[in-house]
Structures are given as structure tokens and as C-alpha cells.
Image (tube, rainbow, N blue to C red; front, side, top):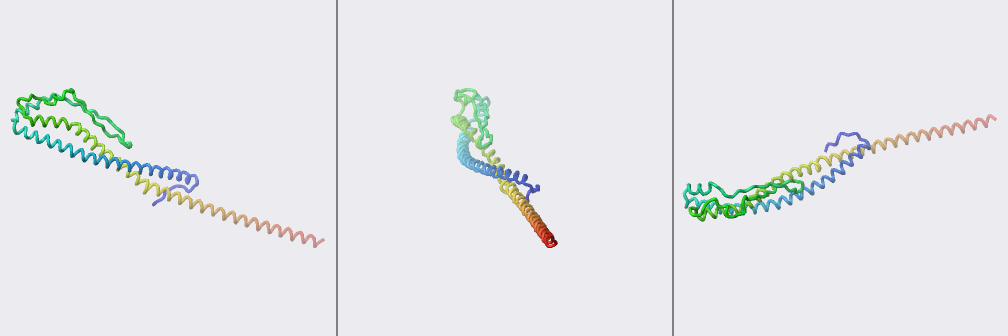
Length: 230
């Protein structure tokens, strides 16, 4: 792993150690976030599968009833019966935060509270199968909105998991090893410089001791010569 291009000084070493400490802490937090996102994602995936199967089964019943109604009613009567709906629906979109991800929350309101308004026609010229198709479609509408919200949440969580995974890998395999390698390099250079300084100090000390010995020997020699000459 290539180290960072920095000056091997103690100030830089302290800064890199602080960065490494923050990176390790951030790596742990991101891993915990990734694990929680994965747990939530798997729970939603199972919920989405069950909800989709339920909705598809109900939609299958709606289609079956509608096909029968189309067979027993003329196309003109069927088109006229469904031409002017009496009930209206307003979709409201909210937001909730899941692990720092904003996911949509869908809700709806009908223009009237009368459940009979789901039938935009009289019952004289229509079949019971058409009534069942309209009723079943009205009943599964909340499930359709819930399914849409769950699938969007799954999609957003999947994108967040991928983004978090890339950040974890970048810290684990690039940034943290680079910082560790650079810290190791700087520490080695500082230790090398310290050993060099100690060696130079020892040499200077040896020179000073040698000079002191020579001065003492010279002083002793001069003293002896002076005593002999007397």
C-alpha cells in the first residue's frame, strides 16, 4: 500500500494519528450502519415479497371478475358504466427517516366517505361481477399504496447500502492502510534521526572527554617539569 507523501515530522505524525483514530471510529460506525441497513433491507424484502403476492392475488380476482363482466355485458354498456366516476382520491406523500435515508410514506383521502360512491353506475344494467371487480379494486388500493412505498424504500435502502459499502471499503482497504503505513514510515524516520542524534552526541562526548584527558595530561606534565626545574 502506497504511503502518503508528507514530511516526516512529529507534527505531521500527531496529525496522522488523529486522522487514523477518526478513520477507525468512522469505519466502525459505517460498518454498524451497513449492518443495520442490511437487516432492515432483508426485513423489507420479505415484507415486499409477501405484500406483492397478496396484491397480485387480489388483482387476479379483479381481472377475473372484469373478464366475466366483459363477457356478459356489451362493450358499450360497460364503457358507459365506467365513463363518469363518482369517487375521487387524493394522494398525500410524506417522509420518514430510516437510518439517515428519507423514504416516502403514502396516504390517500377520498372525496366522500360514502362507500357506495365507488360504483359510478346504477345496478340495473350491470352485472354482479363488475360490482365485485370495482369493490375488490377499491379494497386493494391501500395495499397498492403500501406496496409502492415498501418497494421505493427497498430501492432507496439498496442505494444507501451500496454507498455505505463503498465508504467502508475505502476506509478499510485504502485510507486506514495508507495512514498506518505513513505513520510507520514517519516513526521509523524519527527513530532513525533520534539514533543519529544520539550517535553524534556520543561522538561529541567522547571528543570532549578525550580533550579533557589530554588537557589534564598536559597540565600534569607541565607541573612535573616545573617541579623538576626547581
